[in-house]
Image (cartoon, rainbow, N blue to C red):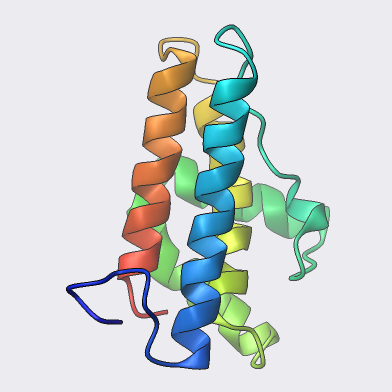
Length: 130
């Protein structure tokens, strides 16, 4: 990725990563613009390309709840092992889809704070070399 222009990708994998991040960013912004009173809408983990059984999703959600972004390398490694053809963007999408509901159920946060927290998490995942 070109540091001066973070949306310019230097390879197909990075392009997927950027498009993925942009997709979820637009998803969150659109959700915010739809209504100020509308709650954050999270993508369904079952709707992303990397299909995981419900018990695995629950276990990985528990890891993210307990360790936050610190759990990302372990989850990403397991996904890479199971889906070696997966790109960074697909893994990022999956991680966001299991992290978003954790934030969304936090009643202490406003809807805007929830969106910001998910966007920060997405940026942290995007910055890692998965």
